[in-house]
Image (cartoon, rainbow, N blue to C red; front, side, top):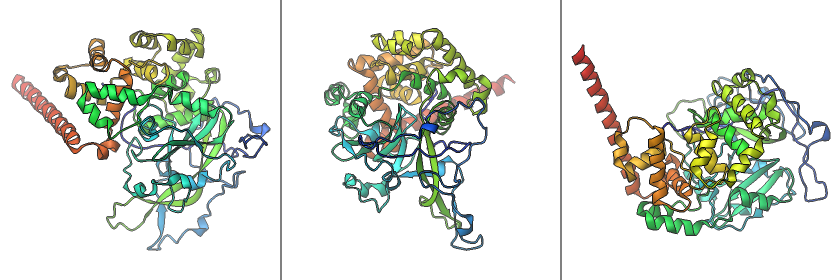
Length: 492
């Protein structure tokens, strides 16, 4: 029951050569919609991507981003000199003050949704999507939407899932790039690129806000006291309604993988076959040369680096993908899965086939349809079904969910040696029988509570219970290994 998308580590992909100019942002007299220059609107698909992708700090672009001057650095032998943290994607940070300079004519819009109905911090970066990037706030950012936020900044703990108390994110949605900001009382959004018309409706559908969450939390809490205690400290966990094609290919990439590599793969995937939309200004983390044992977080350096944002490729654009080109960009054995799934999906009618599965009212039937695609097992199928195909009873069973089932609902599962289709269905039924309405949503709330970044908000006895059970499982495995070694020694 390996987790395909739920491992530790934070990552973001930095796109590679050739360098493209940043999107020119200007007002068109209709609300300041950000547009590309006509000459850059169409992007040629690169059939053979460069295997080496580097952080770009090149010459001036239309966004004013310039190369940092090496001559302005402190001398190498200076005791106070600071150096950039390893020159890779993990050192790039996006800051709210920098984003404020992009499309300033597009104001923050209140979605008018209370915390009980939506908390992006418990929804956007908890394993459903790999396209949202955490935005950090500067001390000098005095935006009025930050009320009640600044005091929490210094207490953040980074993990594979970002931070449970992050307050702003940016990411591509369709043909737009959107910032989402969480405040103590509501959720706001701002369009950085793309049309501003229809965004309210788009986000309402994306977050499935027409499904009231409060009554569901109450129903689940009545049937499971432990969930009720978790619900009181982790409100607003929703299931995203993503584009089915993007969700399918994203979770194929997630198979036997970790978050940093998944994010890196998908960023390369977007860059090679998607459409360029805009550049985001970034900063690099820096740390002291002096090794004084200080474990504090590195500070941020205004070195004018940037990150390009691309749309997710259409199925038509993926016709250009080959096994060789996908392997070259780092997909490994998953390359053949992508090609085979693309071909099969085109045979079945394309994206319309996936959308038609939203009308099927049986989550198990949808799972069976999806596992026909190469590289799609039952867990990946249930992720796609739950996060994009309206299958509210689908239960993706990964390591975290397996632990919940064994620890809380059926200890006898601990004796099972492998996750066969029968056992997989048995685990799903444990959740569906306990939560008759929206079992997949309830399972996701319990899943979020298992993530390291949310430990700090849980009741201490629940955390202790999880830790004790984990230690018992480790001791059990050690004992089994020693017993096996003893038997082997006796037979010899």
